[in-house]
Amino acid sequence: MERKFNVWKLRNDLRNYYGSAMLSGIPSLAAEVEALDEAGEEEVLKKAREEGFDLGKYVIEEK
Figure 1 (tube, one colour):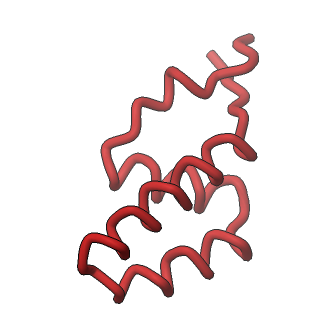
Figure 2 (cartoon, one colour):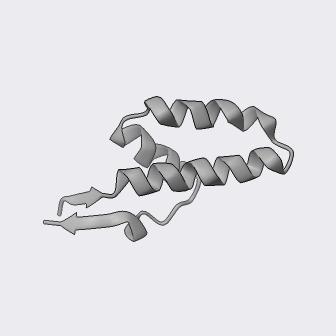
């Protein structure tokens, strides 16, 4: 089964997640936010998995 994800929304949610953590006292995550802007689809998906995001919420198409 092949799945397509809404990577734009996922990238935006990751930015918000990292941004909240930065404001809570983890300023080293600023590099993660910058890296998201350059990251391709696979890298964004990898980061989301590492952070425990439910990728099922971002599926836009299944084949």
